[in-house]
Image 1 (cartoon, rainbow, N blue to C red):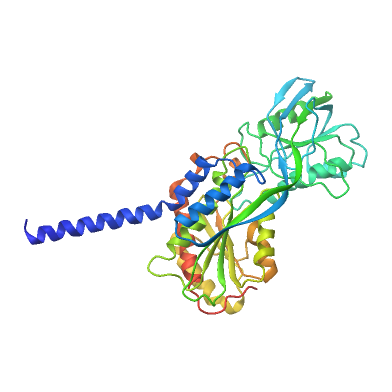
Image 2: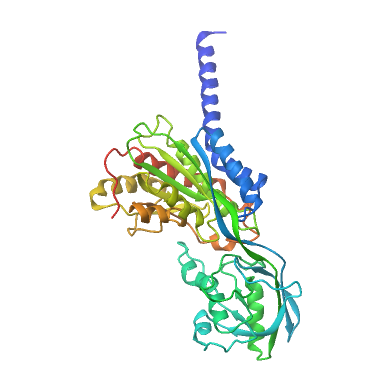
Length: 444
């Protein structure tokens, strides 16, 4: 064989091997989502499945080359799902697709039945005097609309968070709400609720949007409605949970670290691919990719939080455990895996050059910097507040996020590999900048 031809073939082989290695590295994010949702599946906070997920996460982070990988246990007030069932019994008998809300009150296996009182809005429920709903079941209607930034989740979500407690104060024996979601599938959306101190929890569930439409149509007939409701799940104290952390040590260990977070737990209706296996995959793959060429100057710590869905317990536990350790900045991914379209930062004016560098690096990737601070994320909020840290908020397109959020449809097939790869690219660019910043990083 002639030397030039041999050299060309050798170069081609090396190039192919390099490309294969790069492809393997680029698959880290997808592999985390696929394997976590396949090998563990749903990971309800406080459940045996969440415990298996912690062991799985420790093994995976160790295999990926992270140092100081550890499970940090804590206990929570959790919710154990039971039988969820509801039906209109009058005027037009028919079953409803329903799910219990986390921390719902419990019925017997026979359930409860009562007059169903229709409220078109959350405000209309709040407006009725205490005692009006004595012995009755409330139904609160609303129709969440999709937005790119997901901003509707705050006001619409208050119906789920506060509605059951308010209905209980009005004398209701149960409450059903329209799901906090933007889809038209017959899939109810779960999520946690809260009862004020001293208010006894009542059975609380969410029906799918098509079923809510059905109830609204029946209500317009003016005929009295009755509902049977069975929700046998129970709230239990001192259930085991925990966080998982791992580090990529920086070249200068004296510099405060960069914290990147996500949450490991999920609701139990789907497999938690979108919420939030994707987030853990994105931050982990980006942290590794930021090391290509050389280790970053600062240590990057990956934080997979437990028990986010039931109240952000993992974030609180992290701040209690690591609150005295120096951090420079915290970030989180917990809004699915669609493409990132905006970046918002909370740096001090002394870090304006850093702000500009991040905005310039992300602009070629189609990410704009509209100003404003954005949202830090539930799992990193506690440490940000404790240490007055800056954060970078990478806003994903949430137009379709609430079609899937907390439903049986939150499964692997809903993750677009190309969109998730865009997330990893954007996160990598940010981490390369902040984790290699030698000067002070300050928040506003």
